[in-house]
Amino acid sequence: MNKEFILAVEELEKEKGIAKDLLIEAIESALVSAYKKNYGTSQNVRVNVDRETGDIDVFMRKDVVEEVSDPFAEVSLEDARAIDPEYELNDVIEYQVTPKDFGRIAAQTAKQVVVQRIREAERGMIYDDYINRQSEVVTGIIHRISNDTVFINIGRTEGILAVTEQVRGERYVVNSRLKVFIMDVKKTTKGPQVYLSRSHPGMVKRLFELEVPEIQDGIVEIRSIAREAGSRTKMAVYTADENVDAVGACVGSRGNRVQAVVDELFDEKIDIITWSDDPKELISNALSPAKVEQVIINDDGKSATVIVPDYQLSLAIGKEGQNVRLAAKLCGWKIDIKSHTQYYPEYEEAEVAEDEYIDEEALEIEEVAEVEEETIETEATTEEDVDSAE
Image 1 (cartoon, rainbow, N blue to C red):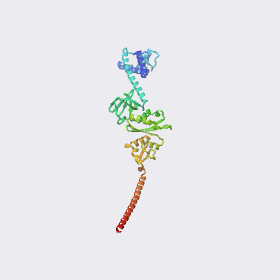
Image 2: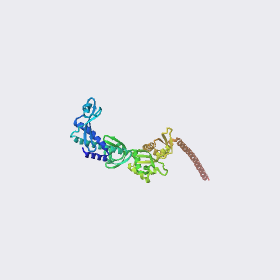
Image 3: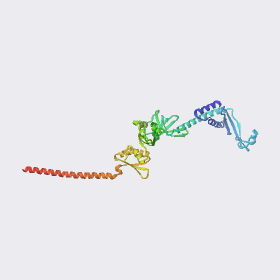
Image 4: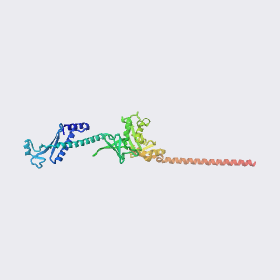
């Protein structure tokens, strides 16, 4: 190696961000192993690479001791002082033992180390880049699909969209563009692995942040999200600014903002409600679009009973219980829904009794009417008999 090698290392430092000293130290360490391997020695050696010229020197190191037990690693104090009277016990003597053909071995070893260090540095930079972008939404291009796992090119690396993080019903086509949520980043032996998701609730949150300036500016907050990917999402929003309608800001003019998110999620339904610190109001809002008559907080403080009109019961529960299930996730409360007549059965009995009373009155009226009709008919018959007699 020579000065050209040092210049090349300096260029790598600028381009790849690999410190020059760290790279040279790694080369020196690798050259020690290469020396021992190629020259079949177990001697304690040190390799020095000149930072300015690139020259390489190999030194054999021996400890100064009173009695030598390992001639490859130790030298007696008497022999050491024969070289230099200044040596004392526990000092280290170095002999230069650079082989004539060591330059070829050094060049080959240095190349391997540099390539390896460049690869490690790039992996490290990719990891540092994406670990800081965790929980963000990025746009990638579908690179390949293997055993239902989708591999997506997201820039400097390839992300993994596992089956468990995909949305049922979505179709993925190679070379098509797709927005994905960076769920996790891990270091592995093969380099950093970026795990992506399309079903994570954070995906909806990030998409609204991209579409709604009020959320980006912090005027509107997304307090809670409950999602069943591919089907329905409920999102609770809040603002401290009385002049801002939090729900309206997320919906946008003529629904253009929420529609942009719906389109990205392939027509997934999204309910946006107003957050409230009052559990009763929050639960009532969360069950939208169903209308709620009354919310009763149970004694355990963790569950609530919700009363809805009879005709709203199925809407409040939702298809296969989805509406109430998402509302419970959104609020963090256990919700039990009952219809008005289920919770107040006495009203139903009263209504039935009233109907029976009305029926009895009607029956009496009918009976009186029938008697009157019979009387009229009898009178009419009598008059006819008198006329005939005359």
